[in-house]
Image (cartoon, rainbow, N blue to C red; front, side):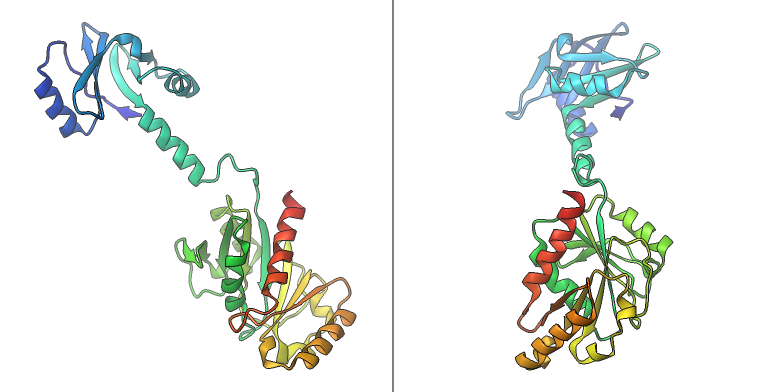
Length: 291
């Protein structure tokens, strides 16, 4: 609502009204005489000013539910004029109502995914977590995706990464920090978290919905099943560095050792081999948890 609205008296010259509208950057001027509304000057898209009768204005008070004003604007009222102690205290226009709707949509209100699914990517330095994340984002176009980078050096303002909203927050490595970061992106459908670099070790989780271990193909022999007790998936990166028979044998051996853990072999950033299957699995995790 525009507080302390500009009002005019009846009989003001149109040229003065036009200058007043331009100076005040408004398109409506209530006409008030003797403490009551007698009309409304409005600027048309064609240029001329038009005088409307008081019936085009919904008059209300400051203590009335705002829903009443919104309903009036959605019906046939040109503007809403708020009176307080006999004085015009504010004007609400359709442009104001549209601005409210846009702000609500930007914050995710009205979406049917009230809570995002959080997928945490954990693994040592050099495993390729960042490349995996960046190459995966374009394959998740049907989801509203955001990114948290706990591997960052310091906390940063929301930005973009691969077309997705992203925040840098090293504190997201811990449960309370992750919760704080998720709250900043709470209107997303999926949040991919790149955890800080570190060796794979038994983890009970820090509040994520899905835990994914990321390790380079050359290092897979060192992965112990106990380190993946809480993980739902293992992504083996840099598969382009191994011959196909060797890679197939590696994947089969991992599946035998890691019961209940999905294993994906990818060559993210090289020829993107295996990324499609991995991305569809991530998408399935979101759909199965949120419908």
